[in-house]
Length: 326
Ligand code: PMP
Image 1 (tube, rainbow, N blue to C red):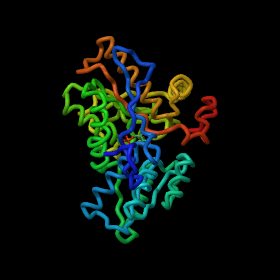
Image 2 (cartoon, protein in one colour; image 1 turned 180 degrees about the vertical axis):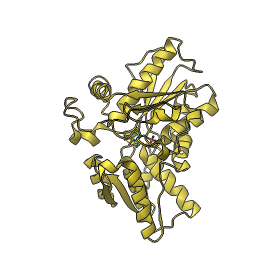
Image 3 (tube, rainbow, N blue to C red; image 1 turned 90 degrees about the vertical axis):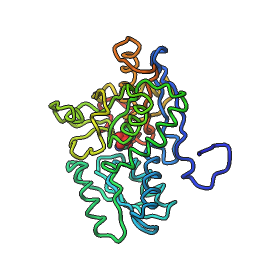
Image 4 (cartoon, helix red, strand yellow; image 1 turned 135 degrees about the horizontal axis):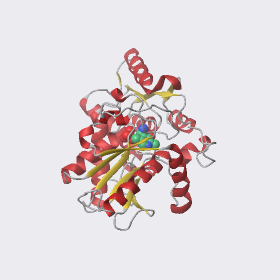
């Protein structure tokens, strides 16, 4: 159990037990609470899966000490895996589409990892294939593959969700989370549906992303600036289980941009675009609960603020909408 009151022997012990904070711009009758994941040592929610997946994979013998982890990643997972890999005696190689933030790539390298860039236009699918190719060329290498590895969702089932449940004495009415791999949402949904089968579960994506295709809808694929969530190829999102989801909300970049600014200016929350998308969706759900349109077992709505806006300053997140580079 993480504690901030005693000396710790490793940075890995500081992962998790992040604060859960009220989003003020939500109804008192149905408050929204956000888990502030930038409090992790690698400053994002992905430290949880970095530590959890590598510890389990070492235990299982999927890779041995001195071996290499190769992962396709938009960045935060690379940082989370890099923090854990070094401390657990593993090497790390990350395959990152070029368009993702340079801050993240610098941090991965600083943590001792090798970064291989792939062309942005080839997408995440190409990065995944490239990671497998690199792993095959190395001795004792493993691809955790966050997009299909059940350990990803399990990390949130075992840590994020129970921490939230404990903080709110189990009184959680709805779970809202942006989906990249969907590990966060799936782990939390499974946990809270076990606590109460009617827990309302909401997936969040940027407008232009294709998660709605899981519901049989036609989607006009478009690029978006919101980073870390969304998909253009649902066949890759193997963790997403539509049976665990009540609705999917698609949030336009412009609304995300406004909410990022509002969260900083009004609530002192220096959080990034996926957090802003989650805040918008969560507040809608909270109003739905308050107004009796959503039937939830409790009033509180919970979500995650996955990382900090500081990680994206070079992309102009706090400049005008037009100046914000996706
Ligand atoms: N927000 C950010 C900033 C992320 O990097 C990610 C992971 N890509 C997510 C949200 C989504 O988390 P998950 O992969 O668990 O769906």
